[in-house]
Image (tube, rainbow, N blue to C red; front, side, top):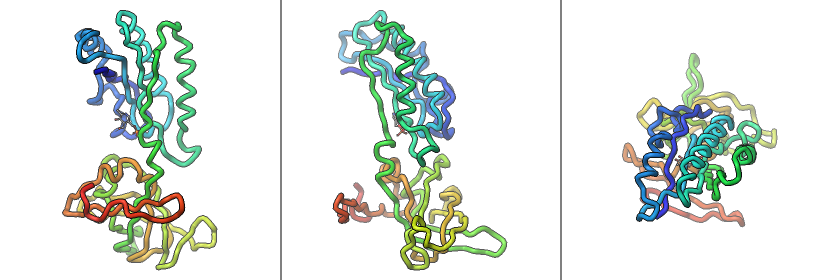
Length: 277
Ligand SMILES: Cc1ncc(COP(=O)(O)O)c(C=O)c1O
């Protein structure tokens, strides 16, 4: 079996602290010394063969600088270790390509542009023969929406408007776990279809949007939403990665159904409410 050994690149990833796995203090990956030692203990003709280096700087990277630093370190180490070892030739740059509004986050092409100059700075014989990438959420995050209905609206005169949904940290744990932000749009307002995009809908105002679970961190933070009442529907964006896959049944909450939107516009039931998988 061929394996890649994970390097902790000891960089300062531009992301939430909870996602910054490439920091020196993070639990992930080996130091350069540890990794070099691990490779030397793996015989090149044994059942487990070291094929190269893997790293993952962090998720939802807001800039490319830490990624570039990590790649530079990883490539230098690969060349150093690979110089004395046949077949140690693969470099895996991990994921981290963020999902967000265009212009607000660097697109994958921006990350890719960093690779060429780093490779060209190395003599040809020290470059990796194979590159790998783990694009993660970038492929699927935007393919899923979590649809929730309004359970309750609290509008006290002396406090902000609070909207409590019937979906929360049990269906989408990222906001409660590490402060991730997901856009929320209204599908209905006061029982009628709401389409903020066409400009004909009523005004929106800020509201704090909370989940229903008995934990203070069960909140989606603040969003601009129209007037809503119990039963109105909202959609929470970018729920196609780390949402259903991280969902739980805490507090005895059954898993929500999954519905697939087919290319022809029809809906297919993918999973029933409460089903395990
Ligand atoms: C080792 C590894 N590679 C790739 C990824 C994918 O990264 P992303 O968060 O951008 O989906 C992750 C995500 O946690 C990871 O742990």
